[in-house]
Length: 396
Image (cartoon, rainbow, N blue to C red; front, top):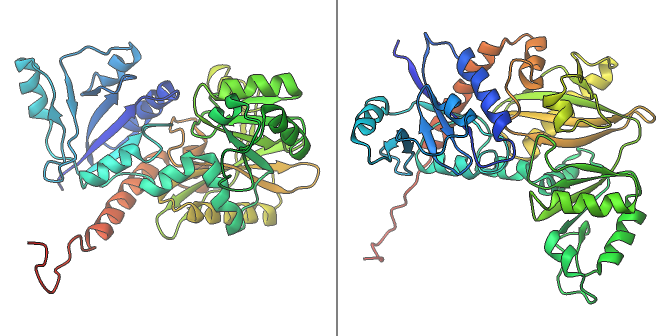
């Protein structure tokens, strides 16, 4: 059988650029070369696309200026990379490689990749791609919208408030904005915002950029000064800032979900972070955090967690894959959604593939299934009509 031509995209304009490179390397190495013709495509921090086997090394070196770069056009008749270089030798080499793709595997964590932007480009290009669509990606990237959708669907969330940094800085004395929902802080002075946060959420609490992953920009505040510094830190990555009540004595439980309209959930796993919470260093740098797979849970609780993960997955219009993260109180055994990641970490030691391995699906089998699901969804969408013939040609 003809090999499927798979484009693996990674890097990107995100604070999770480095994590993405490592994830992509694992995916590329694990894809069965007897089934797939793999084309690595790295996106630099400035947004330049670099194709070819050396793209991972070029991104790791921080390369921005290279003759071997390309672009993916939105034209659905192309479905391939096209040359974007004035170097004629490089152009000929790139053109030889740039045949049409059968499927795209985005391994882009964070903004400009996991948030629906790249998915929108792939929809315009009419290419099958792994993971959630435009809406599901955008919803899950925004932790505030994610919670607002999940709570009515029966997925419990912690108490939270949110604000726009512009409102926080403006320190206005009279209401000048209409809140989008009861959780939004606007129309208050900065001191009134602080009082509301302290009263409704209480310390300790978490401050997070609404649109970021890998714990980038997240801080834990135990008192007012830490709260103010934490808001400024989160604002470095997003204008929308989420504030969440901390779950006392919490266990971090994660579930991998796989599928389109009828998703399945893996066994739950537990993360025991090396730091006070599962921050960037605890995830990637110090190597001291512990993963317990499967998590030590009563069977009825484990089943309930898996069902809740699927409920959140469907409520946010996810497809393909997602890792659903929960906080479980040791004191009350109550479960709370932490977040849903539509492009989770994909290294050999990342939770998403390890949870499926513990459930009976190997890493390579998982990649095969994700590609199959991408093609299945694409065929389903392409069966829909995209034009309408009116009774009269009134528009001419």
